[in-house]
Image (cartoon, rainbow, N blue to C red; front, side):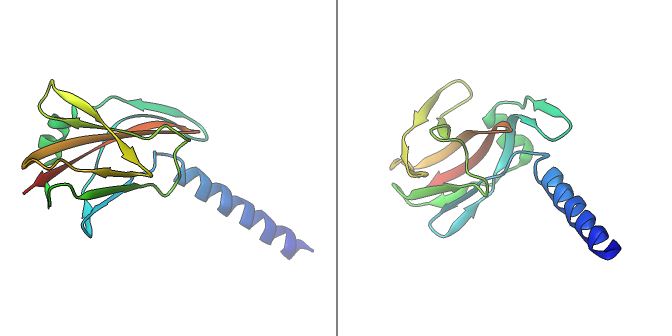
Length: 146
């Protein structure tokens, strides 16, 4: 009887520990395009874990790209970019913005977590954001259309 109780207690502590560790920070997206995984940097977020809530305000996406030294992934004009999370965001909360420079940006339309990159050659900075039960987060990445 003691062994069963100790086993159950161990399982509960283990599951609780895994839940706690997994919910400390927002989930990071996996962004793929033309069989390449795009490097993603954490943007601003507010996230509530089991014991605390943390809000972190980051610099603008163009400055994050410079600071994190993210290299653009080279893609074809009009390529499909897919955004996936290991924990699904709340319905209708996933959004994306494309930055043309520090002050000029535009919302990006996408369908089923897929967006089409521009057809014009150039370097494009994207910001993606989403909401979950525990909070919200944004992410930044860069591509180069050639």
